[in-house]
Image (cartoon, rainbow, N blue to C red; front, side):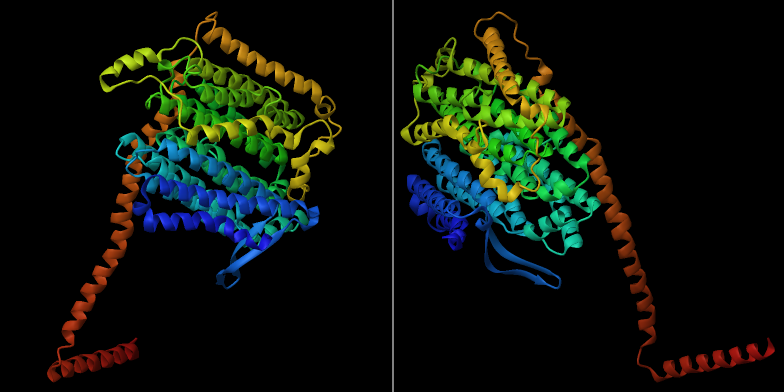
Length: 636
């Protein structure tokens, strides 16, 4: 079964090609059904491979399938090869599983859109690219998928490109990710120059064996981190992700939950031995940037009024937690939180899309309220997602976030404190969202009256194609934590599963105060979550305290506008100056030399006129010159 791993990316690719060829004939809903079936079939293949791997010993859970030799150029030999191991299969499982649910959801959400087939064509291409990213046996195959998801994000974010905001958001995502691509490419160059291969196995073995110098390992790790900051939206490159909300809601769920933003976390986990071989400060940098990003985004989320923008900044914040885990040496915790986050964040985004659909494309939470009465399934499932992300036991997010904070406490108390404050804010702003949307006064009556001339705009529950994925994801958001429970080593299922990948690099905190008192820290985490929820209820439901939503937080600390001003002002002038220098100095020098050579050759060409007398005169002048030289030489 492992040799059939090529089917996993091939099926979504086949769906993409079929819709390219026959999309218009298929139309709605059959183009969507085809795309969904292809992704679901890919999930079935991945699940079969997972169970086969599970039946093997830990040492046997590694298999490479080489499709063909891609780049046999001198010392550089790169195969288009796919790697089957616990990490790649874990990623492929939730990419195809949650991706299938998002495809099914999109059939209902995109109903009536004139570009219905094209949307599903892009979705299948996106899933194919993401699968190539996580299944690649070497950095170059991963980079193929890396660039693929970057291109697809541009297509999907700017899908409704007739809106200026959507077109701008797509371009911002594309350009920002190019900065990360520079880091990824530089890491590849360093790795090849140091080890002579781009294979993960070769690079990681060199790092584990001590043949990779600490300086080189640090350079590779930091450049990979730059790439990860671009794809996984960390400071200072996070700014493309909130604007990605301009795409249709299924795109938001696909990008924010199951695919693109997790690629940076995956890449750093895949290269864990290199980070382990680097100087200790490399991990500190990763953890610090992650913690600061988590706190920064959480403060912004408390003042957002767009239902999707709250979730967008929440995603940036949760990704920060994952980088905090990686920098703290907790790779299993990072993957654990990545998986649980995929469950509850996909649920929350699809739930928000259901609300937007039911509210007739209204996204302002100030115009909602009491929607649980008219959208009971959406409301119930959204509340489960809220409890999971807020860190309430026994929901999935509680277990994964607590494990990250446990390692952070053992590694750096200051970063742990930042993580705790972020957890408090997460519970606060997510409770705020739930209250504004599903509880309190029904403010959508006024909204309906505003649009009364266009018919009945009373909110309504979404169709079965949209609520079915919500129910499945709600179940996963409840039960997902069982894969890594802290009670004993026997309940660390994910840790045992990933052990062949991270056992050399995973930090051992046994014997530390944090490990010995983990139940105390666990109880403290519960108090923090409860405090955030209670404070938000007191402000937004009971009205006991004044709302604190400063404009600077609503404007994202004005970071985005500052970057835009810099790029559009001095940056624009600098770019024009560089272009002028290139055109007039660099190109001017080249063109000037060419013109001088052309002028000189024109003079020489005139001498070659074909007349014998001219040639005789030239010879005579030459003879006289030679005689004069000999005479002068004799005199001197």
